[in-house]
Length: 219
Image (cartoon, rainbow, N blue to C red; front, top):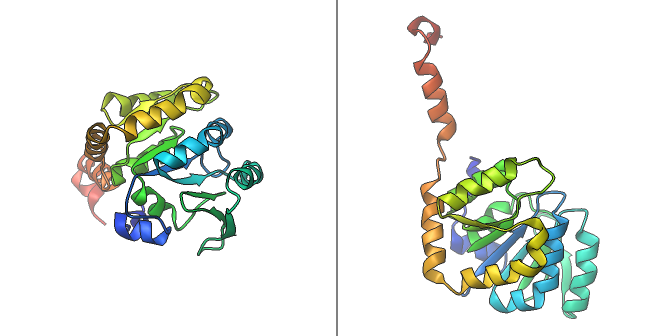
């Protein structure tokens, strides 16, 4: 796990991203290219979502122009600017959108109370470090591995899973249900934290070395 991710505290992360310390924060992410079905569902429900939470929306490069246009329609006072790292951004009092985040991705993860994303292995490896509960939407054209990844977190009580084809109807109710049940969200956060193994690589290396004959361990 990258050390630059672990350095963020919740308070420092929210300050970095100009988010209020009060109220929940929802992180929406589809990776560097984005997830069109997630972006579409979020933009369709955005007026209701911004009433329920502050939103960090990482759109991906492909959908960024469409999200910019939609945000202009929804938020007449949307401020388009660059983030401290030079990345284009849309900022309002409750909604922030970026095509992608690099150095600040750790801040986004630390600031959030709930995430919406695909279920790729690298993404799901980051959520436990931050104890970040998630609504997972496996990519339907990635064979079945994302569904298996999501199912593992669901079985451990750390996430809920939605099918891609049902997003437009089910995303908003699922998010509202979780945000309106702080005890359930807290239980999911605790379950996610229990899955965190930030020193996993060192443990695996140690296990491999333990299987080697003593003479092979010598420098």
